[in-house]
Image: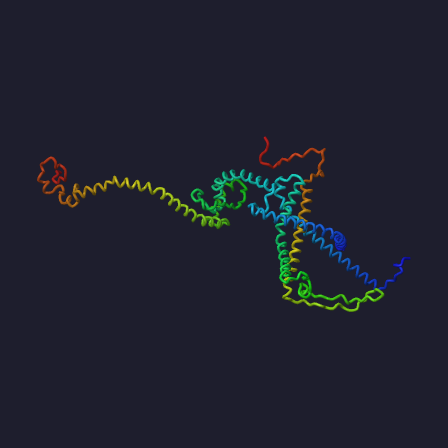
Length: 241
Length: 224
């Protein structure tokens, strides 16, 4: 009942104030329409001068400069922190979406690191031996974080393989002129070639000729020169007991 | 005794008066509820002003109420223009349709609300002109119910008036809502300029010394 009476009283006030409200609203509508027309004319000028539809306000400019300064301050700190964070956070469930060398592959996008929040260790033991405990748990049960590791491996493996292949290609490209030079030099000093050339010129007897001229020790020819001092080697079958 | 008190009110008259009072009360209650709804809507629309000026205020670029009001006025009018261009285009299309129709038919006396080839063909229309007769005594007498002179029907010739009137009504209402939001943001900016830079001494007592920050006794590092 009280609410009904309040609404009734408000109704009387609103009926009295409604004409004033309408006047103010009409003034704002007219002012807004005039501002719209002025802005339309301005926008035509801005279009031909190559400016923005709404030029930047001085306060907005000041704010932008302030934000740029803050970003410039934070940037070096972030750059120093990122390599350490990458090495440390690998054991803390970090997902490396892409790992690459920027100088080698400038076309590829920057690496995005999305950390998964992990609860803070409650004690020193937990902080030190958390990974060992986790490994023991993984042997028995599948922990809830296991899919994340699997997903990371599935995503990382092809990237690392691709990188390895690219690295090998780059290495081959860089090393190919050196290897050619080395091969040429080796080819020049190759003793096999010298041997083959000498063989072609009959300086060295062929194996068949050597076999034909070969005479083993103890043969008929050797017994003929039995008394000579040169044939003291060989098998003496006439030994004394 | 005055002449009013000498009037004798019958039971029927009393019932009629009570019914009229009841209707008036209900009418004012409904108006009050509608007004509350409009005020709530304006408060909701005014919150956009906070979004527009919050960055500049929180970074202490704006330092006085006057600067805040001036900056908020600029941002508000820009936001109004961004919101208002669609209803203005709708209104322009409606008005252009009306002008083109008149130019083609060369009929500049055309009433788009008429009941023959205008927007009035879509509504019921009654003739109230002959229901009351005024004899020599000057007192009106209700003679008959009003006669129905038009039933809703579609006219091909009135299609330009359908487009023109409907576009102008829709665009006009939309524009009024946008203008109301502009008004709400302006009121909110004035309130914010007073509140944000307000300094209160409500709980300040100069005789009491300033409180030192309390040390945590449970901290692991104890002073030597």
